[in-house]
Length: 263
Image (tube, rainbow, N blue to C red):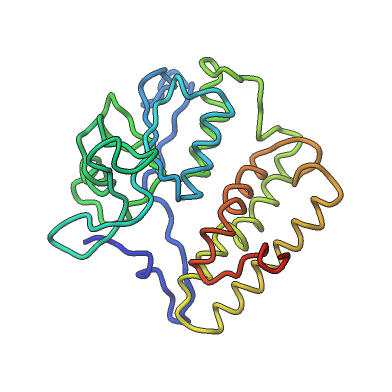
């Protein structure tokens, strides 16, 4: 049965995100089932989705867009199957239907849901993007954005155009991990906790954490160029993809736009 985000509501009315389900790893290890081969992998994204967009950002900034193909679904949920009411990511019927989106030329799928069903006939989780697809084995490698960007950062350096760019440098790993934690909890996932909360108390708490974290970012970035110092890192990308959508997108999750207060 298709799983909805609203199925992830706790007894207190708070949104509790479930873990991603496909967690395979592309590795340079000689025995890896998924080696970093040029032309083997495809990234499915939605431009509306911040989780998918962080992967697309890495694809471009690391110079992997010639080695890993990608395509985008339509930006608005639609019915995915006549047998139920589940709405999710859908491919357009033509390249001209929606700017930036295109039909699935690899598998002929009409929806992201179909890709999950190809990869696992008994799949019962959510049908989310990003999807990192293995063209050779015709399966999903990984659908967890935080892991996909780590793979893009290191495992494809032999074929990347920017192999020396390291967005998760060893000397900054503890700081990046700590920053990622509070940004994810209060901002990246915070907007969803506001939007999907079913009771006032969890909404109030999520909103308090969200705007407290935004104030923290403002304070940090008033003193330095990037969120973890003077170097662009993974933490900046993870923060940016949420912030850039805030004024137009996050307000749908009942999070008042900071720019409206400025205006």
